[in-house]
Length: 104
Image (tube, rainbow, N blue to C red; front, side, top):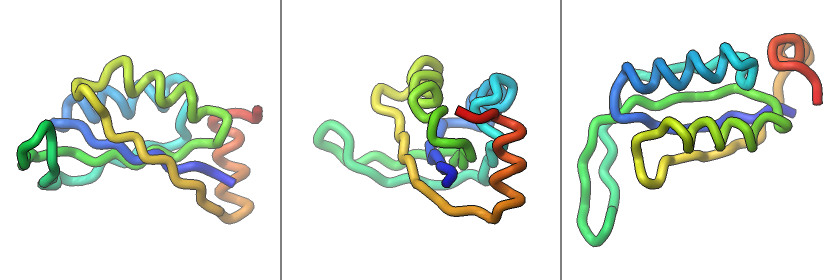
């Protein structure tokens, strides 16, 4: 079982900084930065429209708490989006991830 963590950042530079930090620390085997998206959401009684960069962080379950801490420590939003999805993978892909981020 692997985990996919979804988050968004306000610009490419901050998204790249987070992605590099997670991969360099071996907390994520891969982080994919998506193209810009438009987000429309409710915030403090109003409706906001914002351009954001989505990140798809691929990791193993035992790194989730540390990833949440890293995101929270450098994310510019008061309430950063951190969605955690459990996913299945092929044996070969899971073995690659274990080599890159280590076993528990």
